[in-house]
Length: 161
Image 1 (cartoon, rainbow, N blue to C red):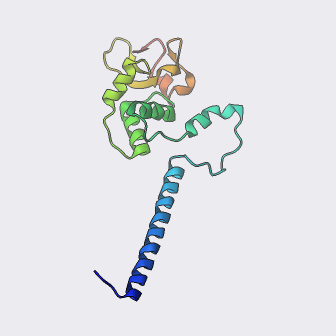
Image 2 (cartoon, one colour):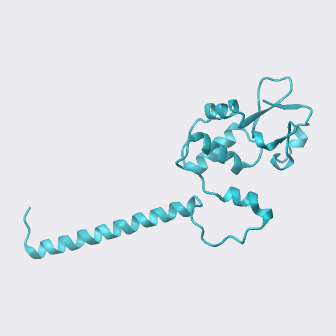
Image 3 (cartoon, rainbow, N blue to C red):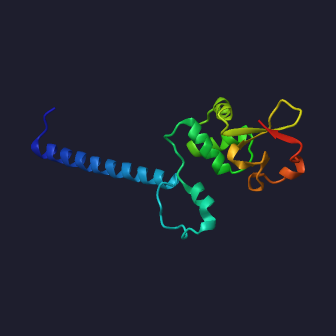
């Protein structure tokens, strides 16, 4: 459609301003996502000490574009303790916003000895998932036990499969 030159000039100016604002909004959205998922260092963290290595590991950004297996491993690192499948799924949903049944992927990680299933001896049903690296001499390291773990389980009453 043809417009008078002065109307066309106003439309061009408004379209240019609209594009600039749209670009600025897209940049703000990117910045919000980077801050939200820990991809941006705001300089608020103290200088790291040797004791803070695990804290630094946990502060790495969540791998949103990685394979599901990698994301589950990161979720386990974030949880840091023996966890039920439901807890893993809830943390995954919190980090990604996606509700996904992780059972088969967790079982695949178990098959490859990345995750282990804690189960009471003499039973077929496992209760909690742990990372294989959290085990030392067939026992779960103290720092990866949830509160009350020792009240429920003894090292002799559980096994990891």
